[in-house]
Length: 258
Ligand code: PGA
Image 1 (cartoon, helix red, strand yellow):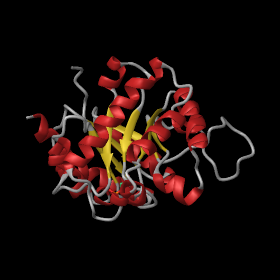
Image 2: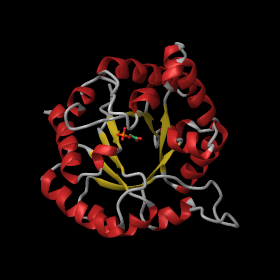
Image 3: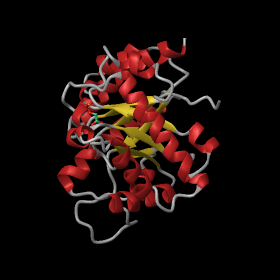
Image 4: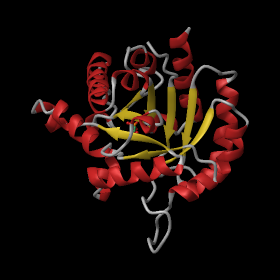
């Protein structure tokens, strides 16, 4: 089987100024120490991206991410940011289809698809978020929802581009609620997502694509989640705001490899 490098990402959402970002990064690297075997992505608000560029450059395992982007290259789109602008700041990846964007800002599968296509053609790696609500889980519609989000979101993505994608399984009922999916529950969804990826691409592609889990990941539960066969990383919100906590999660990913 293809070895998939674990990818641990900090999604700060609308938190931390550029000044706070700098001291965060200093503390983070001190706490983490030497780390080689995994990939770490820092995803601050747009305003803190330049402040983190230097911090990321110092660490070969670290990458910069953005939380959103527009699908057009430029133009009259007040308040928006393009993939080209992010690339110019050495941003490596972008979170797309996050449930907060879908739920609070009306992003549909179609919009997510346009953004994914634009990101890929600009050389940005999309971290594509998918996941069901509690009502959908209770109605036993998890597979249907995941399948729809993947089919619609990844429409037109070619097999070569699949290699640049990361998927994040984020059940909505676990985001910011303190309620994490049980490792077996998450594993089941991840294995299903991998099978859907195989159906829209091919088996080798599905075997190499990385699928992160997101939803109340904390230092206390990260290792157990990351030990699951199809869980290739974590997209961490709340617990990533504190550099010490995020460092502990990074160390959990390293511990899994030992
Ligand atoms: P959380 O957020 O870790 O605070 O649950 C995860 C996310 O929304 O990416």
